[in-house]
Amino acid sequence: MYGLFLRHFYLITRSFPRVLDLVYWPTIQITLWGFISNFFATHTTYYNNAVGVILTCAILYDFLFRTSIGFNMLFLEEIWSRNFTNLFIAPMKIGEILTSLVATALIRALIGLIPAVLLTSPLFGISILDLGIFLFFLFLSLYLFGITLGILVSAGLLRYGPSFENIAWSTMFLLAPFGCIYYPIEILPELFQKIAYLLPLVYIFEEARNILINQTVDIQNICYAFIWNGVYFVLSIALFYYSFNVAKKKGTLINMGE
Amino acid sequence: MKNLVEVKNIKKKYGKNDAVKGISFNIKEDEILGLLGPNGSGKTTTIGMLLGLLKPTSGEILINGQKLEENRIQILEQINFISPYIELPKKLTVKQNLTVYGKLYKINNINERIEFLSEKLRLGGLLNSITGELSSGQKNRVSLAKALINEPKVLLLDEPTASLDPEVGDFVRSFLEDYKKEKKISILLASHNMNEVTRLCKSILMMKDGIIIDKGNPEELINKHGRKNLEEVFLKLSRSKNELN
Image (cartoon, rainbow over all chains, first blue to last red; front, side, top):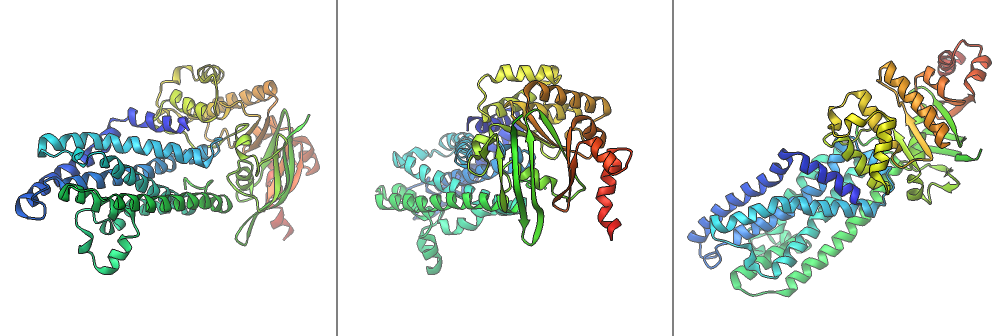
């Protein structure tokens, strides 16, 4: 497990453009949303008691996005470098491969996020730490959902090969409208609301807004987020194992670089 | 000598296509078995099944007496593979790559092992070089070092000297001969280089259309088919269907 982590650690530390890439997008994203947040805070009544609502949600969403994309990138790096076969003939259990990718994806996401979060205080006078202890649970929930999406996409890559790569980039964009990241769920049409309630995202972002705007905590939202996360996480692991077995039958593992 | 690899009537079907139609063979300790055949004959599929990357439709593979299907991880600790079609991460240094794989194969004294292999494979001056910046001959030796990092009992080689110049090719062949003799390992060599196969292999399997169409040592096959060398035997057997038609 440590070997696979080490492989990606070496890769990141050897390449300044890779570190820059990890830090660049979250910083740009959060700076942009910081200004948008300031604008809304001064021009709407909805946000006037909680200046950092949009920015906080942007940071949370970016963490989710980075975790998911980070996981996919780790998997894709092996395909692009034609190292995939070497990895799958190493004596590692599937669980060990997933665990090391999950840990590495967290580190990648944090490398990008920490500088961006540190910027928000001096630039916009906002601290995500206003969410208090519940920030940890929201982050944990987002991290779980991020890696769940990563595992689902990786299962697709195993099953269908590199042609599944485009899906890897688009998953988050498909789910974003249902996640109610920047708006309350009531904005969505009824059918979309029903779909949104099946995702952990809506509970996480509703709760972040609830804490910041109403200064109250609804534990139920946090619990629902974890329950849905648990369901999707178990499903994603099962699907990954299934895809691995299908790949062994169809020969995808030996043709992965092609 | 005991059989380290036992392949018992393995078949592999992709949909309606029979890639391997029931082949059996053994590889003994201290033996290099040549696996020859034209493109599409089932060599890669066979290697994939031996590596546990492909599940046979039927049949059984035993490595060092253990069933591959049931003991995949324990078996993977004892085998390794080299092919020009797979590479090591290009951005890492040679030493980093070998360290990563040393960890993945749970090697205790990684530095000692790397030192030993770098000396044997003339990698001393390359350990801190970026893998992607090496020449193909150097990359080949690094891949070979990776394939030997776990001191495998069974080594699977797919075109191990493809695209190498004659000097490096000769060095790799000599190294494999010596290493096999010293460690008593089993090697499966898939190659289109008939001189290489003649030099390294005491026994050969000829595959075509998913079956073993002939086997024996190089000299036997040459005499049996009345040809001058193994390349002519290969051509005869590869074209045999057309001749028959």
